[in-house]
Image (cartoon, rainbow, N blue to C red; front, top):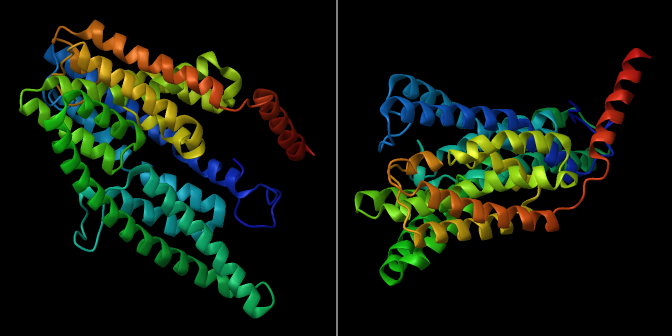
Length: 379
């Protein structure tokens, strides 16, 4: 693993965008581990309970243990994502700011809620912001100190981490407060849209669940979907579940069909995430959102709208607020649900095939890099 700690090592020629992408992939194994364990808890509940319960994943003893473990692992995603980005951009002095900033985004800490608020969680975009803020603040501090002292100074070793931490924490407090406002406005908008048109409501929910993985829009859509079960409108929850399955599944399908658009590690991760996508977990798409946002987010949104809309039109119902296709078992609409999801995933993957750039000689370049490193070690 090529960690970039300073500007004097052999990787100093790598640009900021590549450094950010390297940092993003640090959290990929943790994302996959958490998603797989939570998926297993869903499956075990279905097998032991014999159907989808409202508390799917938390009914049987084994499922509870797995779900709790997976939930704890998922809490590491935000700190690792922001910490990795900060590390690769600003080096070791930026790591503390990145990790702490990521923790704050995952908790939703604001001045009004010092212990955290689920309505203020900023999700993936907040974590990326924290990492960028921590990394760039260190680089800026080092530059300013160098200009003042006219030379490289050891003073930066003590000042840079503190400056990084202060800048990141202040920025995340503001971002979390903004997320709380967005969440409140989203709830009002959803309520007004629901009174006007249920189909339009489903379209809006599908956009929210796919555009903002783990953030305020995602949470608002999920909360509304859960509430719809209590108000005897399980079709809305089914549509939200269908749309939420699209990002992970479309990444997996696109990596199988358009192999030249993905590097080797991206293909392996995307294919592994298909299992999690079937269980309705979208966090396996986070690395692609963080590194190729402008090329994958629109296809995922479009696919999510297609899946959610078809699911609602076909009358699918969800018996649980989580579990993907597992939440439809026992409601009689599994085939229709799968058809709706597959339609959106196929459309999304097809669009990605045209929007994603070709990764030239990805496998050959990785093998070449490994051979070069081996030659250096043996020499």
